Amino acid sequence: MAQTFLNLTQGVTGTLPNANFSGGKVLKVQSYEFTGDTHTTSASLSNFLTCSYTPTASNSNLFATLSFSYQLYGNNASLTSGGQVVIETPGSVIRATQGFSINSMPANDHYIEFSGNVSAFWNQNTTSAFNITLGCATRGVGRIRIFGNSAGSPFNPSATRFTVMEIAA
Image (cartoon, rainbow, N blue to C red; front, side, top):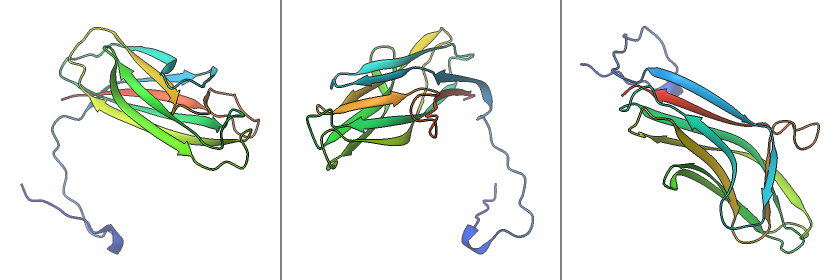
């Protein structure tokens, strides 16, 4: 099969051939919305959302993505704060983690709000229901807060959404 290469810096002109890709068909999509509001000062994982998922085929792959809004706070103890958000499956298997930190807040009672995304791709090798757990933890100092839908200021609705897509092998 001939390969086609595109140089997008020069623009695309002409006709591209049809692509024949095997697999990759999306079998199922489930989306979950975090409507709560949670925070922790612990360096141990604190779960904020547990989602049940049942794959349609044991050989399919799962692509999970979490878009979240969060706050790092010095907790009146530190000018630094940091944390992590994880996607975890049974057996305490961390499928993905996103870490972050602030090293010089103006004062230890200040906070900074951000948004982030973490994604994972794996095969659970089952057609039985299993739980996917979303958790957060600090890096041992300060506090991390995860905003659910409609938490935070009225100008930042702070939606946190988790989506799982099952993709045919």
